[in-house]
Image (tube, rainbow, N blue to C red):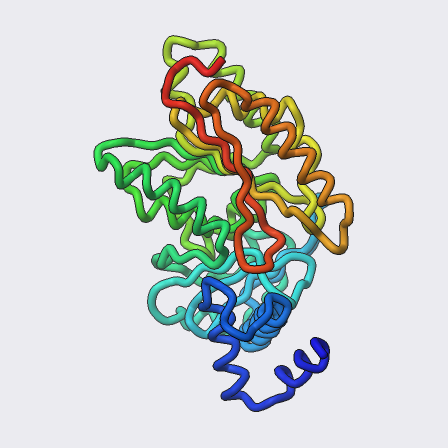
Length: 331
């Protein structure tokens, strides 16, 4: 019956469909009488409809071992990014204040580009700082709480995996004293984030592999132990994926976790976004359990706490959260 239900939702009357889609988008918990499978189907329909009513801002072709990237403009002046021609959803979505600039919808401009720098202009004067994903909201809440605890504090945050900067833009807008360092492997994405998604200039972005960056940071901390705390981070968020729900092996390896341990401050948090299952990649479930085991082994220090949290109703997303003790010694 579930396939028939999905078919009736797609082909049925617009008012009924709209009401159900709004309920699926907004409900934090399972609505009465709506199963998780049905809600996921509604969300997929909503995503497809959102793409259908949008227009392409720029399509950057595949290059340098990375697939194509498409940035789309939506009716409310939000922008989304999807990879490899995906029309069933998006990876990042940011809403910019005001109406779209006329040049954003100029039909005479080519929207195909060989690089991010060749993309046509469509300024985002200021992003509203909203977040589209439940796991992003959980991470943002942790970072926001550190700003609200002490207005004079200057927390340091490391984001391993920038995308187009949805989370980075949110936390930078919410906390003036926050230092945000971000790492992104695909060099096209930071450029697109600044051009289309309102990524603030004060977010420092390094285009590199996450493992190389954290190993270098670990060496920097160990070289200067008198000033090491100033080089460590209050929150480290890892959001590294390769194909589907797979996390690259080096972003879930013992050397990677050891480096994270070395560069997180006492009282800080390490958070990693992982999929706990992926129907298209059965190995993901085992990788999730293996990664969790590595976290428990690496962060077995006194008063260290490792926990997992599934986020989103019926979602494949989970967070591994490590809470460090405030004491300087974490042996």
